Length: 394
Image 1 (cartoon, rainbow, N blue to C red):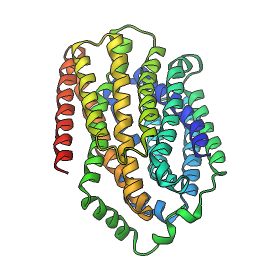
Image 2 (cartoon, rainbow, N blue to C red):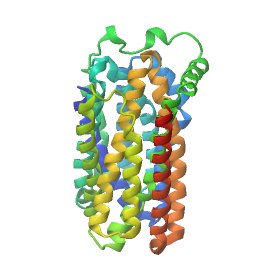
Image 3 (cartoon, rainbow, N blue to C red):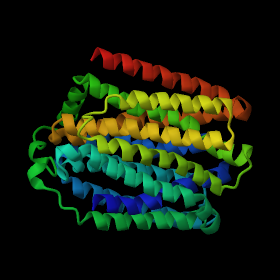
Image 4 (cartoon, rainbow, N blue to C red):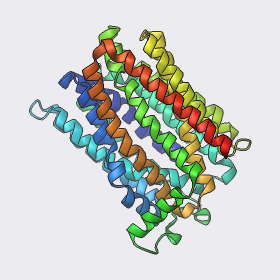
């Protein structure tokens, strides 16, 4: 039920994300504005994390994800109406809608991650995470693949409307989920003592006292520092430099998602033999380094597609490691807070990175973009080496 419910909204949201990039490029021709869109979409995850984590642990996690989906649906439907009128068709409307969607995401993400251990036994957690994440990637792929074409054919307002309807349908589907209360469906029974501040601090104390968890969180956050270099460059490489149609951008994003699906399918099946997948993050960063180094040499279409596939696979490996580590090694009663901390860290570094990367890309221009790819590739290689040294030391 969870996978099917997410699939509907994921498909609509994937089309929407491609449409937003094309719409903002059409309205502003600025990488900075596209980076600002990512900033306002991600930032609520950081600012709201003390509240969202505690509420997820206090309330029914199923209720939280349903309300979050309904809220995001209403926002998208309202934004579609504003974009229909030339008087209100602006980047400002898109940014406000993205902020509201980010608020919904801030509640939805930790709640859905904390819900999974109440749906499957511990031995199936990596498999369940792989199935859910792989399914999400699959529908993201489908949405991205047709997003550019649908933008040209239908236009942004209708795509926003479709995305809003998909969130509402998803909420209805999720209402049929019946978690097993015997295995901690909500966490509320053990999370009602103490203030919101005290409970948020409890989650922080757990992270401070777990070095391996800190490295996993840092690795996940690091992807939000590195990936904007590729994501914000793609519209300009594909459309301006290679002279390809707008619809091609969706196909390139789909290639990245295909890499993620492959990684989830392979790594998710290793739930029994590889308990926490400690080597996944360092392998993922090494792969990311190679992909970005290749782009520093050439931005031809084969190199761009190959880099997208490799970085998609690397991101999946790092994500699967961090999520499963929290679910398996820490008390379910604080899962909401730990996942909120993970979301907060990525939401802190992600927006800053998107804005800074957008500014850098505007300043460097197409001729000096390979230099930025080379620098980021070196940074990824250094973190992969640091992870290997830390793992050897235990």
